[in-house]
Image (cartoon, rainbow, N blue to C red; front, side):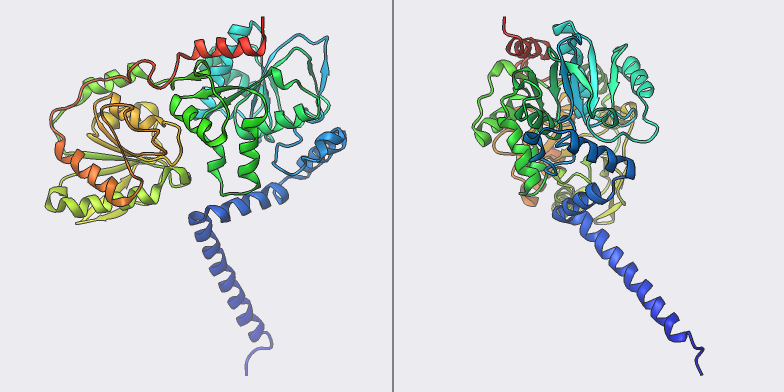
Length: 449
């Protein structure tokens, strides 16, 4: 005879097994399906809020004018600025609108945003105020952020305003605003539509074509709408500006387009350390979590490269850097070794030993790794995008974003490796204008004389 609860125990085991299988399947879909990730993000935005965050969101909705409430729910930041108040008696500041500044997680986009803000405060001769529109990470206090800005950017005395403190907050009527991402630009757009802030006093730092970051959806259309908000654009590179004009029909004057900043001193030192000796190394800039970096396509191209090279592939060291992933078999007993995220010194040291760099990006912004490689003497293989990447540098080879074209380019580059290449910076003016010149032009439009 079976114990009275035997069936219940078996049923429980079966349920647990099914739950585990469902979890594995869901995780698999999350990794490969951008639509699934988007849906889960929306659920987390709605259901993942703490009780305190729900109270803040409810207070923002209650305090927002009717003209702003119609935008509730379009994005997590929609009403974050809709309850602020203007006061003519408060001295003017530059308000840097950003998701959050998290020391230790300030990557290229946020680093550029803070750099632009620093230049704008100097040109405007007003203090900087950082306004964070995401809910603040635990233990990321204003004091921690202020110390980081002082240490890393020589910005002292910066006022930090967290999302949790924004509802009903007073700002100066003469303030200038700098939006730095589509979600912060959306918040400023809602506030301007509601008559809270003057859109003519808002600059918009555009660093990529963000509607492409998500599938066709409310999220992508909200991002596209920010380009038509009437803000003064400050655009990172001519290739991006060209695509933006073609895609959105908005005029971007050349004087408002700046060139990306590369660490030329480190890159010159990297070029000087290069040597033609040692095993050939191919470096893959790999970010599996960022779909626009085309991780799976890059792996496919490397496998096709090994197949095409045959015995020539033996002895080549294939490594990846950017984000950690499991080591992957490429064929012929060769493995793509993942080095994960590297510190700056380690990154440039690895670059000095890499003759060929594969770096992909399905967006018009000219990302840094191909330029870091080309400037420091390596051959960079990347994908073209709407004809925005050709002729940017003699050592950047931009081909169609498909396996065979990328593999052909990789094979040619590997076979051509010989003497180490020298330092070769980008031709001045090719990617954009000096940042300080662009900032002055933008400020003149924000504060006409």
